[in-house]
Length: 78
Image (tube, rainbow, N blue to C red; front, side, top):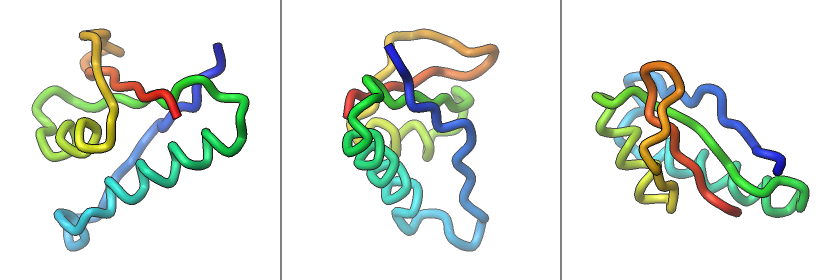
């Protein structure tokens, strides 16, 4: 299974809470789906990063409790 990994998604403070993280997540999922060779889009975030966790969940990403170091792993099939 090939994964499409979002290594880092950071939004500068003045641009937060404007839906940009969700827009970026949707674009990555769409790109992975159109490429046709990626089964899952994966990323991770720190447990205390509630805004990023909400963005993942709002955009169909789920977690099964897997951790990558200190970060919670989220995934979504395109």
